[in-house]
Image 1 (cartoon, rainbow, N blue to C red):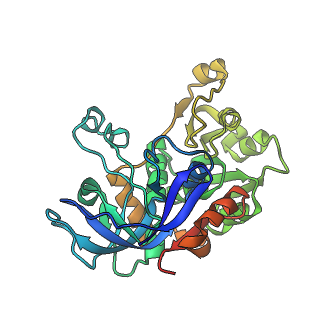
Image 2: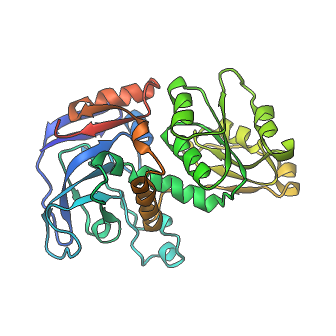
Length: 345
């Protein structure tokens, strides 16, 4: 099969490789649609200690397709089924799983290899985190289940309530999906970003109530606070950039009693500084949510299948496998939201 192989930062190649034979409980999926992702772009630029453990490695993790082959022990799927699979599944047995914190599973192996014509899905994902698609749902839309599952997990854990003022800094695909889900939860949403493509999508896709071009307002604190009830500060502020200086800036946007959600992961070893007086006497809740769980993967599929989250609007362009490297570079230059990769042309 054709497959994008990752050899190191800035070094990926489209090659002919053997399809991994499925072991007990595994299935081979013919990839019909795959999507580029900000995490893949970061990995392309500087590597990733968790996603990429061996070199060369398969690359990409957001996909949907058709079951091509089923190994012994698979009961709920058959050849020809239209499916979407997450890039992980919890073990259910470790310390964190027993506490219901499935996203922190100590045995959470992450699946890579979506930028390929076929992908072999591990048994645990097949059992717990692979879903059959509704007949009327396209592969292109279904491929968004994994990134949306992260967002739905984060939004629900944040505890967004109807009528809340919610501010989002960083409107890449994740920030845009956060804005859309917050709107569906009944919030009033204000977003801030710099990229004109993404600012337009904040209106067309997320339907944000207020959209701020941060290039025009380097210090947007007043605008965000003016948007809130009584101009006291946001009920919820969500950071979707992953830069320490933006973490600190977002902290200043919430009201006493509000919630700050640091969703964007910063570079390893990063440090931030907060005003402890504001945090303590302001009774501010600080949180981060990592990854997704089977519960939220299913909820993401519901949102997409219902049409409530029109994920297809986030597709910048459709590309063949051979252009994945070009796609990574376009992302780095800020000229895309998500590329749809079609392994079969």
